[in-house]
Structures are given as structure tokens and as C-alpha cells.
View 1: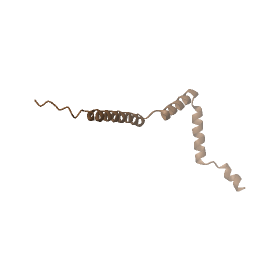
View 2 (view 1 turned 120 degrees about the vertical axis):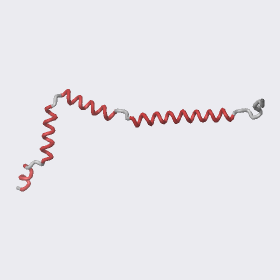
View 3 (view 1 turned 30 degrees about the vertical axis):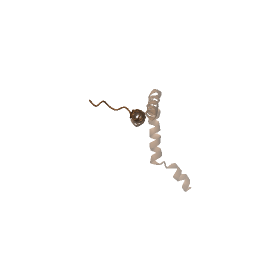
View 4 (view 1 turned 90 degrees about the horizontal axis):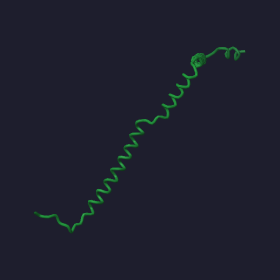
Length: 86
């Protein structure tokens, strides 16, 4: 008989959840749909960190190409040619 008496008592957490459920049910469908879309857009939005990392990677790649070609072309100067001594 103790179990039957214990099951009739509702926990405060359950009462709170039930109250929140009633409040959400009172909202109209367009408001709920807009809230869901807003939350989904926030989850899938590209952050500033990701954009910064992509730009930094592109910049590093360009600098590497520049340095490679700079060193390659500067080393190709002909040592037999001497500058004019005027």
C-alpha cells in the first residue's frame, strides 16, 4: 500500500514540466515555427572562428607560394654577369 500512496504524490519537477508544456501549447503555430527556425539557423550558422581559419589558411598558402617563387627566381640569377661598376 505504500507504493500506491507514493505514486499519487507528484514531484515539483513534474509539475514544473507540466506547467511549461501548457505554456508552450498556448502559443500559436507560427510563433512555434518561427522559434524552431531561429534555433535551427543559429545552430547551422558559420561562426567567425571558421571564417577566420579559412582566411588564415588561404593567406598562409599564398605566402608559401610567394616565398617559393621569390627564392626560386632570386637564386636563378646568373653569377657570370657582374654589375656595372660606374
